[in-house]
Image 1 (cartoon, rainbow, N blue to C red):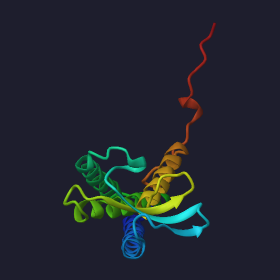
Image 2 (cartoon, one colour):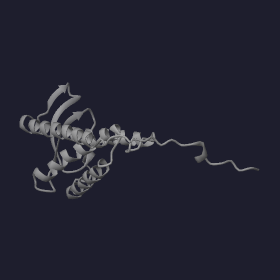
Image 3 (spheres, rainbow, N blue to C red):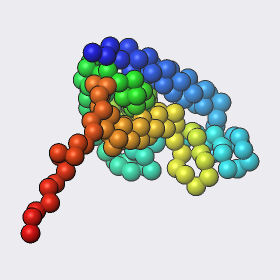
Image 4 (tube, rainbow, N blue to C red):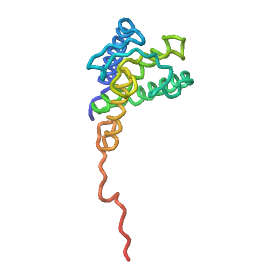
Length: 173
């Protein structure tokens, strides 16, 4: 049996969380709202935005619900993580967990108050909505988890393959 990968999941989540927190602290300190810092012309900028909603500013009036959903995601990842034996699943779940915790910290501790805090977003690329390290980590982790599932890789480290006996049988005419 393959060894558990829970420590790997926690390490990845911790690195993402730390990187997210440090970048948000720096951006809040150095970037003034309405005064973006150009990184690559006006295509890539650091632009301070406080987002009460989810991605693409959806559900802006439901910050408390987004907080509850994020808590549920964290609990679900921790539950799966206790039996995790795949390093790829550990990577994907670690990215999701670290990102969810990063945005949850904003929801709990930033203005206007607990469960209603606005998430600090700051990366602006072209026409794409402004995002942060946590957001990109969640998206990358989710894409990896979907790909692993589609290709039959399980969290327990096994690969499920479809055998020919599972294929539908042709009816005789």
